[in-house]
Length: 463
Image (cartoon, rainbow, N blue to C red; front, side):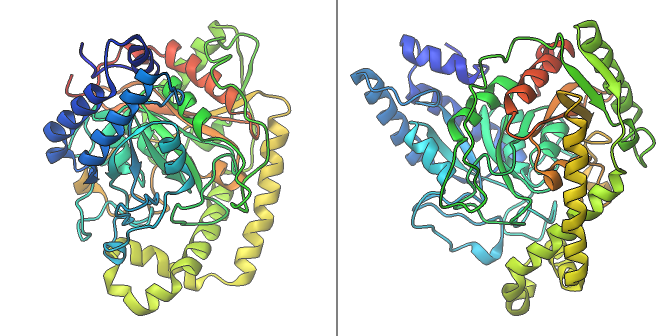
């Protein structure tokens, strides 16, 4: 049977029915990597021997009656900021080319404990910030919809690997939009869970109070299955929350009837660079949600610029603190974009940082207040479709056409979901944000959007 188009759930069903083996899934995935990655540069390290060993073990366990759960025997890949025991973890940087962690990150360990198959490590913007760059040890990942265009960052290799069909799900991280941005530009579902929902232990930090771990995938269901595996309290991660984890699949296909959805239209309606395709797409989906029984209304939130300013002050301050020693000793070993971004943190004073933290509290209260009246907030993920490499100065700069950082500042769960293609054949997405630790409703509405937008009938590139 052909395995290229199988969802995570379908792969699991086929494995348990005996119509496919994990070894077949893995070899098929490795064949797709061999065929497509030379043009896309999604992988910085392919762990083929490890993958085949994982697959053989998964098959033997299933045959003996041992079932480790929904990821048993399923191939996946990790952004190269996740520690993998005995496997190089570089952050896409010259500074960490020789870094071989002694043990797995918590996320990598959960996949291993769940019987998953590790295909390898994926490209990122250096230290999950500056890029896309051509002065790093590995080339930047390219967008499968048009290889002259960027994927978005910083989970660039994750997005390229999924959109090209090499793998169904890959892990990213999100500090200002690094899951949702690439998801929007590559036609994927990507969720930033609530701050503290997934352990970040063993993941190289960019900004301690903004960093989130989460999956990118081909569908909302794939992401819901993945988060179900990863969510949970880690007492050794100081930011981890001891909050019960919902069954994310229980209401996934329940539809949107009776739900209330608020749109902060001032965020994007007149923003510089907003595309007519994005505006039309949001309006089209809003109308279909109303037709499906949801209440969809415009709402007011504080100005987007305030969210962005608070988030960027916090991010560059904390990033500089993490990298200060290496910046003093090894500045020239960083890529040009990365160094330029990190050194800005030296100019931010304690007063600026503390004022940003105070603003964060007020902004969080404003979003929480809106979510007492609405089940979710719907807004843009990106203001435009993916730009070309030759038009990008630094796609992670403050002028990048993303609208994702507000929910890093506030910590609310937020998901980018695709809604169609523009006239040039490039994906357009929108963003759904929900109440703290209510990823289940975010998934439910995102699944509704996925269905109502007609995205499931869209053919991915290379098919």
